Structure formats: structure tokens, C-alpha cells
Image 1 (cartoon, rainbow, N blue to C red):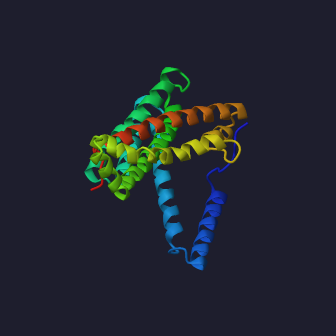
Image 2: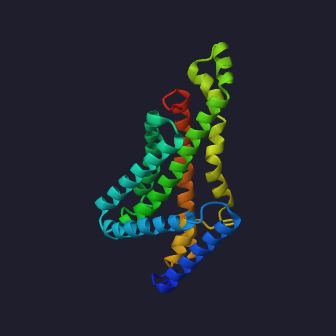
Image 3: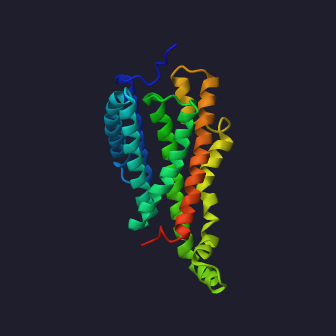
Length: 247
């Protein structure tokens, strides 16, 4: 049985336009922002998804082009993490946590054969892992750097007690790691009870069984936990050593 949900056509276009216009009306009535905020965001999303859909339709047909797509996605994720960290040029070090987190999980999935070496499987799974790792890395870097700024006196006090600069920073930075990992942990703890994540829904919409959908989602969540933990741990270490710093 094939799914006919969200088939491209006039009904879908009309529904999307109506929802966007209603959101714009709410913006106008409640004065929460500029009335064109939602329409402009929706238009940008439409253009981006249209281009990406056309590219993926061709790229997923070959393994090499699928890996190239992942490489481009990695570049975009790295740029986003660097920008969000507000660490200037030192934010380039954040490429390492992103690479370690994604570079461990995706190959593990491929080597074990759980994820087939096909573009249609590699790009979605790799994209989800990369996106979650990017969020954790960005959040970890910002929280850690904010902590060093607001608690600078504690770092100085630790230095005066004889601790190394790395250990002094680490005492302040380490607690922020838990905050960066919290979204991923909450998603895992509440999956199936509060939310049905994208991987689960995607398999169902592709006419897979609920058991298959659950298996894919478990794989994604476990991969995210490992990738995010590795990325956050390395980010905290880089901040503690002064490699990533606020400029």
C-alpha cells in the first residue's frame, strides 16, 4: 500500500498558503513581529526545499554523489556551529567535534550493515545524526563560553589555588555539558510518549510497518546519543584548553 499523504498538487499548495497567511495575520494582530516574517520564511523554505529535492533526486542514485551531498551538509553544519558559537576564527576548531561525532556513528552503521551502503539510506540517517551533532556542538560551545565570561572570577580563584589553566576552566565549563546534552536525552526519554520523531514518521509514511519504524528510530536515537556525547565532550575540552574562545 502506498501513501498519498502530502502529494504535490493544488490542494497542498492552497493549504500551505492558507496556513502561512493565517500565521501572518496572527503576527499582525498580536504584534509579535513583522507581518512578513512568516511569509518570507515560508518562501525561503520553499525555494530551498525545491532546489534540494531536485539535487537529491539525482544524487541519491549513486553512492559517490550521496557521499558528496553529505560532505556539503557537513560544511553547512560546520559553518552554522562556528557562527552560533560566537567564537570568531577559533570556532574553526568546532569542525573537530562535528567530525568525530558523525565520523564515528555513520561508519559504525555502515560497517555493521544495519544501514545499507545506498544513498537513499545514508543521506537521511547521516543527515539526522549530523543535524543533532551540530545542535549539541553549537549549544555546548555557547554555554561553555558564556560560563567562562560570567564566572571568570572562579577561574582566577582556581588558578590562585594552583590548578592549571585547563583544569581551572574545566571546573567552570564541565557543568554546561549536561545542558547541551539535555535536548537529545529528553527526546530519547519521551519518544513514543510525547513525540513521534521524524525517522519514525518517515518510515510509516513510506508504507513501512510500525515495527520497522520503531527499529529505525531506535537506531537514530542511539546514534544521536553517541555522536552528541562525543561532540560535547570534545567541545568542552577544546574550550577548557583555550582553543575555542570568545573574541
